[in-house]
Length: 309
Image 1 (cartoon, one colour):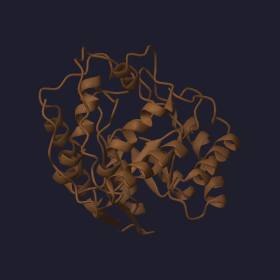
Image 2 (tube, rainbow, N blue to C red):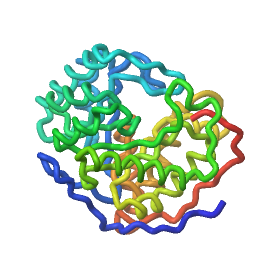
Image 3 (cartoon, rainbow, N blue to C red):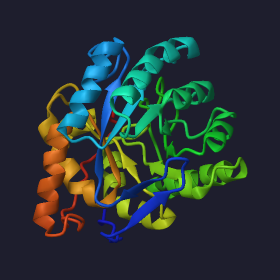
């Protein structure tokens, strides 16, 4: 499979006309993940108490995170939804406390529920990160009213079933078609294109080969839509499969190799180990000579047989 040759403009930036305007650019900044849940695939239970989650967020910003992403519902393969009330009880105390302690740091609410998004934005969140890309009929209206950025993520299926048998006839073409349709639906509901970010959904209804093909295609996606890209590949088990390890990926080192490889082609990297990701991105920028040029390294695609994330 040939490597896509769609070079991105290293100087590209996007100013999002939110109520609090913000700028995203290439190469990527780091977004720290705060899982306020007991069952995250990577760090479940470490941040499920508000005080612990706030401490994690403060440490991430000290380590170099430019953004924080707070979520109260696990989306690991096989996970089941939680109630709106439960999700709100997990995320609102964390967002309020972080906003008080970190008044200038953008905070994203990771939710697919419109009412959770509404209350999180009122509590101090700056952006909505929706893995279901507006499947809740009220989500676009909430975002339009708040005049906040919105991340649209691609997922085949749902977290409970997405890794049973992912399949595509034209992976990148289908992802592009999905984004085009969701962007059109968002615009019809009053969410301007300038407020949208796109996430290819690494690990969400994808085999190992699918994940690596999408990472290679980030420049193509960026060119197709001229929108900032958010990428979350940290600790995903497809990395362990590439390396021939058993079980989910537990080491951050391999994740950071990929962070360095794709940083020039996206605007936000959603990560667990902030210090390591920041270091990887800085080294990649130093190696490129400008901080924004692609390393030119191709990701090799193994023979995939329906592997998990």
